[in-house]
Length: 578
Image 1: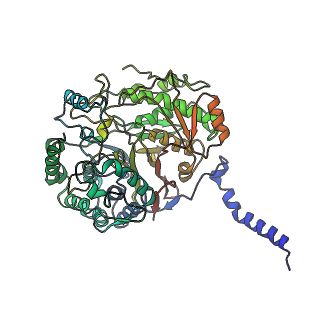
Image 2: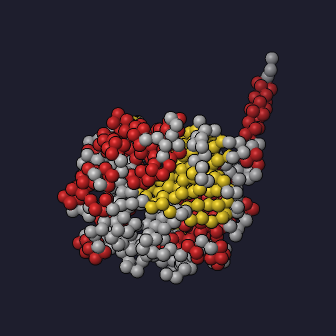
Image 3: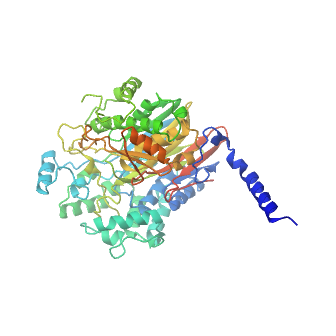
């Protein structure tokens, strides 16, 4: 008979032997870290990663039906607009980067809408005076710009689509009409948004609440009005939204409610195919959308950080975080002063993205937290969004981000249409000298950014994270976690995050840098000793009490012929492949 002591020792040794392969994975040996909450998802023929499990399954079904990554992205986005109205919907805007395998070319689309043509700058100021405001308020009809997402879908489909839009939108329509269970994180944000929006003019309460309250976790929610709108789009195409019955309904409601958006604004709307901006970071070509989008900030931060040996400095150390925070401060001053609609402002990319400029800015980073972080070139801290990415058996990959800006947007819902208008116009400046100043027919500054990485001329990584002004920080964190610290793509998203707020903004708000170094927030996974060390460098640091975004990513392994998928483990995200 084996004694209890020997049995305990035997059990311990058996357990140790069983877990040893996990402790000795090659990708852990490089950095001695293990932050992954779960394994990466691996698929040979296709991959979908979204912020909602049902949307992921809808995208995956499209791939299995013979659709491509572009079809899957549109279907998944339509589903998230229904199932996660706290972050996106067809009342908002869209940006995407697409890797087209056949041509081995990256394409980028700016599907953001413009301000009303009938609202002049002087009229805007008069309206603001009447409500005693200096800037555009988020839940006012002044903040509504043309919704660009639907045109973005149809532009993507026209250029790359495989299945019909009727097939692509079938599942989202079915879920809208028959219902779906609301997930936990979305329920929380939904319920917190309702008190701000339920009394807005229009049909918000009847569309998005149960007798004036948001849905609880697990409650079945239906949106038949949105289902009908999607049916119209599937049958009649994008013109139904911008020139047909939907546009006419929007025009009529806006006139009745003293809004500013008109039929002509919708009729004149176009998306724009653009060249993505890029930089090379340690042999990896990183691509972003520029112009009126903050993607350029990712590239500027990487250029500055390239001058540091981050791998030797170590993940999550005070030295590394100090470099990150100071680089962010410098870049966000450029972001506040220069990023704007390129149709109205010549963004100085030749300077902002040059390695020489990055070297100059890097010299400003010292051993303590800087207070003077003004831009070196003459011349919003909040927001909910969804990010998703797809990949197919042919090798096509899509990086797509879509948003209402502030959660459920303005709360203005035209009866019968089933969606809320975005409040992206809030991000215009009212300073007449600012590049991002309001003008009729102009695209406001956007926080939402899709990312893509190429390696040795081949597609490597499609990724992004939502989270307002946090997004460039999140992009840089994910990439450095992978490139500098050897993490896999799930671990890179699960690792403890940092944030910094208090920089000047593209709306014209200027931080008094002589009075503050801003606010640093760290997730609790960062050791408290690091918190003390950062405070000793002059940073104001708090643990938690911030929003650190949500992430999805797909990496392509050309040698093995597979995709790796990762999603946000902090909330409802899911990656799935086949």
